[in-house]
View 1 (cartoon, rainbow, N blue to C red):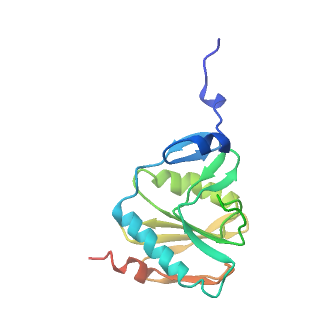
View 2 (tube, rainbow, N blue to C red):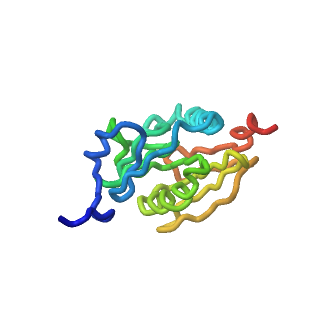
View 3 (cartoon, helix red, strand yellow):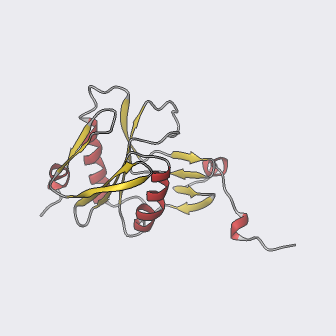
Length: 182
């Protein structure tokens, strides 16, 4: 009998659905998610969801969601902190690229969010990818330009207009971060 090798393990969405706890799946490899996010992480996520949601009253085809499964493929399932979706039909998980994805960095997820998820979201053609740095109170905003992400800048007190979204949203980062400044 031969030894089991890491490259022989390839989990699928069917496996993923049966697991307890919080997981993501990267090309068939199971990645345990960190314990429940810290209070500041949750508060920032709530603030961003609120800021997006308040702009959607006149845009009924879009919605903003927190921590929902995004089934990229049968062996890659991600759970972004926030996703803005438009005209999505599935009820149990996302099946197509959101217009905006937000990830809030923690020390245990930084490499995943800045490297692995960055590349997956780019390849899946997510229009905007926002990485929030809660300890430093700023956000990096990336916009898909053809096949690559173009960094729009670092935002702490500025407003950014997401012109290429179905609902033409904007975020005032000064308001998002103001309650966390000392």
